[in-house]
Amino acid sequence: MEKFVPVVVIKELSEVDKILPALKNAGINCAEITFRTACAAEAIKIACEKYPDMSVGAGTVINAAQCKAALKAGAQFIVSPGLSPAVAKICNKKNIPYYPGCVTPTEIMAALELGITTVKFFPANIYGGLKALKALSAPFPQVKFIPTGGVDRSNIDEFLAFDKVEAIGGSFFVKEALEKMEG
Image (cartoon, rainbow, N blue to C red):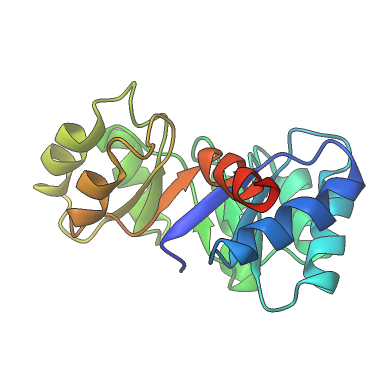
């Protein structure tokens, strides 16, 4: 997995050819295209076809139907704001990485029971940030985290320094990459 997982919201398909090259130019070869818009599946399909050297996944996947649509479009990983056993089952069957949002010990235990050892920690700033990750790592040493939400340039280095952080997720990567391209 890449160290940076940009959360990408595509409102119009033309944005794929604006955002993905900007990310690549910034040295980021990953994009989590969210299922927050009607064109998400088509955007993933286009991204996978036009940028085969990038790791393109689907984010904000909240049910089995969205998961199936994302995988059909070519998503290479699935991210959810919470834990869906139905999504976990589909991903497990197809051998696709699934990163569910888990912030409590109970949610982490449910993920572990499904064979998941890397979870999205979202929204990281609301649920205690790095202090919470360190506390949760004590009883769950086998778990890695992808903090997302409230992680930015002011605190990213602290998160990355913690060995239980697998990657950092965030929309700020997209904003920075686009600003760099423009200017």
